[in-house]
Every structure is written in C-alpha cells, then in structure tokens.
Image (cartoon, rainbow, N blue to C red):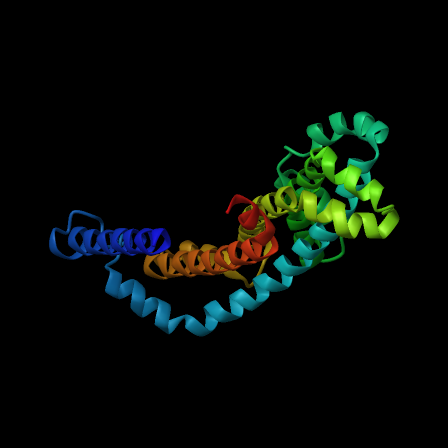
Length: 253
C-alpha cells in the first residue's frame, strides 16, 4: 500500500512539472524559447535522435560495465582482506581516507598520458570513482559483524572460504550493497564527464555535442534519456538489493 501511494505521488509530481513546463514555455511564454523549448519540441527531438541515443547508450555501457565489475571485484576482495587484518587496516586506513576523497577527474592528465586509449583511460577513471565506496563499505561491513556470528562460525568450525562465503559476506552484505549504490552514482558522474571531454560517442558526448551547437531541445532530450537510463539501473539495483537482503526483512518482520 505504501509503495502504491508513493508511486502515485511520484507520477503526480512529474505530471505537474510537465504541465508547468508547458504553461511557462507555450502559454505564458515567460522563458526563452531557445534555451527552454516546449515539451513537444523535446519529444520530437528525442524521437528523431532515438537511434543516436541508443548507440550512445551502447558506447557508454562499454565503459561503465567493465569499470563497475572491476570495482566490485577489487573493492570486495580488498575490503575483505583489510577488514579481516586488523593490524594492516590500522596502518593503511589513514592512507585510504586521504586518497578516497580525491575526485577521479584529478587523474585525467596521468590517465591520458599513461594509458594507451581513451577507452582504457575512461574505464580507469570510472573504476577509481566506483572502487572507493565499495572498498570502504566492505571494510566497514566486516569490522562491524556481530560477535555472535563469529562465535557461531567457531562452533561450526568454519574456516577459510566456507567462513567467508557463509558468514562474512552475508553479514557484511548490507554495507557492501550500500557502497555499491553510491559507487553506481559516482560511476555515472565520472562517465558523463569523461565522455564530454574526450569521447566521440556516448551519452555524455551526445549532450556536449548538441550543446556546442546550442540545440537545446536535443540537449534536454539527451538529459531526459540519461535520467531514464540511470533511474532504470538504480531501480533494478534496488530490487536486487532487496532480494539479496531478504533475511533482514524476515528478521524485522
């Protein structure tokens, strides 16, 4: 019931914003029609550029997916390693806290010089942006595992891979998934920035390209398409998160 009510209000707010947009651009005409085109013009631009938008989406996913998968692999693996090694964690955590806030865009000059292609450099930058939330979230999840889980694992004589797979990963999963959600947001931000300045295709390039020609109806169409893609991925991630954390919902019930 709560989900239905929240969905209703979300749709209502979106419709209200569209109505206001139409009123201010078409009827009242208080906004510059070049910078703020009418909804119908944006919809027409979206339809005319649909093939280009889909091609840009495919190009963007070729950068985003490898970077996120690498961030998951190294972030979870490294987080487990440092989370389970208290002495190493105490030594390296100040370094991690110093490096993690640095924006990935600061590494652009080195990525361009040291890496062979723009695609490799972009994947590296997106990886950096996505890695830290997953890595630090995993460490926090391992450190904060309830002592009862460790006692139960010791009673069952679980060690090595079975201990990690059956106890540590499930217990730290809420923190890992929270970090992954933040990582996805950072990944999209870095992806868009990278494509705006060095790509010849992609969702970010699409917006930057038509912005250079002051084709704002197409720019807005590209922004809406970006929003739709990001929203779809985040909603899918939320559903996956609920499935993986079903045991937490059962405990609360």
